[in-house]
Amino acid sequence: MLVSVVAHRSIMSEAAAANGSPSPAPTPEVPATELAQLALEDEPKVSFSDQFKAFSKFGDSKSDGKLITLSQSDKWMKQAKVIDKKITTTDTGIHFKKFKAMKISLSDYNKFLDDLAKTKKVELSEIKQKLAGCGAPGVVSVSAGKAAAAVDRLTDTSKYTGSHKERFDASGKGKGIAGRRNVVDGSGYVSGYQHKDTYDNAH
Image 1 (cartoon, rainbow, N blue to C red):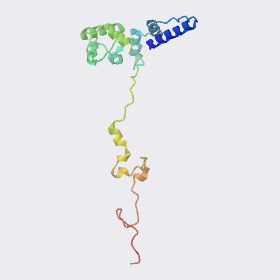
Image 2: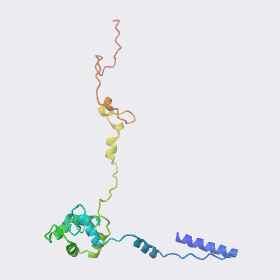
Image 3: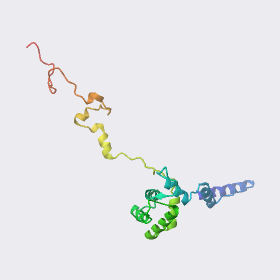
Image 4: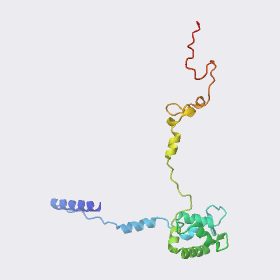
């Protein structure tokens, strides 16, 4: 794309020189690094302590945001993708229990993360960066599931057999109660008789 733009500009300048008209002044281009920096500045920055307060209130309407529980911490770490194959909820549970409290403060939580990072040989700054940038606490969006082949097979009315086949018409629409109930025939003939109303009364 960049090559085509440069080629187009060179062709335009050559055409302008041939016509004798002065070429237009080039427009100053903004470097890509400056654009990226501007985009980062536009985004609201959330600190680690702000995230701590948000997740310590998650699921607890009475919390003041100063203390966090193990379950809230695990929720935070799962959302930030800190908990993976290397760091598990078992690891977080072991290190959290060292504080002998159900809830811990921000300063203790920093000690907890430091201890966890040293034990699992992970950079503390990397963990904190993930925790700070994981977004507000909430439910992770789940994509809608696709119908499996077994479900398609079970819901295809054209493949139904026996009495179930009688419950649907040719288009697959249900017949309602008429397809579920056997209506009593009071004619005196059995249901499988083929020659109904063929007897000659003259005999």
